[in-house]
Image 1 (spheres, one colour):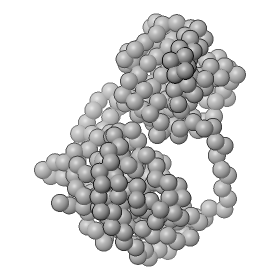
Image 2 (image 1 turned 180 degrees about the vertical axis):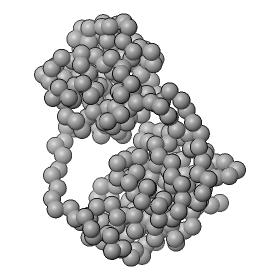
Image 3 (image 1 turned 135 degrees about the vertical axis):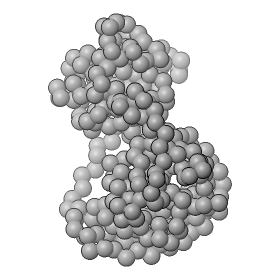
Image 4 (image 1 turned 120 degrees about the horizontal axis):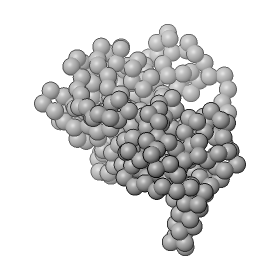
Length: 320
């Protein structure tokens, strides 16, 4: 069976959930070979083997931390040359898509971004994508070279499948461009204790109807009762009510959780583009004609300040 390269997204050896989802998808089209780079790469091996990686290529060098993107592209190209895979899979993060694009150019291959599913095909892997703000679903495959595919988080289940996880050290020769852009400083993000927005299984968002930064406490309380991430519409972000890092939409982040709860959000196309692939969508809005109700699975016509606190209370009661 052909091998499939999977780029490992990890933090000091802690493998992030989207990588485990990629391993599930990779097993549908071949044997997963994971590529783990940077500090803690060796610590990822056990988890990767438990989720189907038949081989783990590791490399550590100061360049991976000190410079942007290109050293990782150099390493992934070295892995590509060593393995000759049937496909290369990465998570659809901002960095993942940049690495994928640069790699595709280098190896002369086509690229598919933001896939939501993956299956084997006679002429190569077939990726499912959502197009035009998820109004259409398309199936695509790369017609030239080895496909480089980025996959949205929460697009596949995490399915453990024990494999050998044989460890090999990846020899990487860095290009002249690798040290072109240096990281001068880092500021740790303040932890909220909530899941990362694009990886969360549940997202609770607030929009213009929240009517003020101080009122987002109502949204946060519901999110915390569900163990969810907090999102915001562009209107709420532009008004300064919530940070831009939490914006869901075409100019913010794309999410695809199991459950998305939109509160006080009208459902403009800009917002729908970032959340329409959610598995189950619930909306609370006092305007019965709001466009958001056109795509929801469950809709509540009512004032969010009446509905959301009651929902939060009921959830906490059942949990208790």
